Image (cartoon, rainbow, N blue to C red; front, side):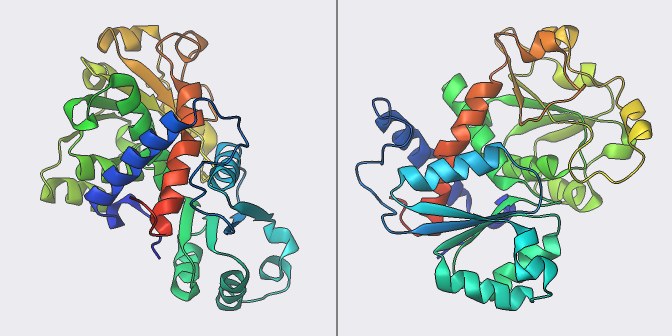
Length: 310
């Protein structure tokens, strides 16, 4: 049994194995319908319990299809309908019940402390579907998408992130960049840089990660341009002030023109005003392929958690 909580905690060889397995499984499904089960039925009889404390579209759909295609099933729990939410049942007791009924638990939560408590008491694998500090399933899927499109190792490419560098996506992307030795340029306002612990880790590991405060400097000659919604699920501060801080960090056609001619654009969605329609709907944009690939990577993450990766 293995958990999938943060990219930094998972050995690089296992991360690469997940991506490799996802590639093979995607190729084998070319002639299958959406709900057809993989021929090897690796998770027959298994049930994935899911709980969403935050809104979810792609994570919800992708995990449902992932476990279904592997031969198992899923049940989505609504926090407001559990004793945990309204009856004061402890996380310890809830976790033990989940371990009794289910085979794995995917949690999308507003609390890293809660995620760690579930991990402490759970006897089944815990998967982080998103927490305030981390979005590991999304970032690993993005790496899969980049390698699929570019047909080369992500370590041989230059990535550029434009936007908030203090959020959960950026935390996981930095962790992944260190694991895969990715060359990563970050363009962000000074008040929205990666946290001090991550900056210290970058220096300690001699990471190929550079921080800029002008997008034009960061995006030059990059292979991949990435961004995220400026006002995220975790933002509780002055939203008007934050939006004003990012007025010079919008991804537009001029920005993309500074990257390589064959550069691609990625966005984990949902989108806001951080990217123009001209870029988002362009041929360089691979956001729909990026979203669909969540299914294939989620499948391999589940297999990793069940010790069934080959």
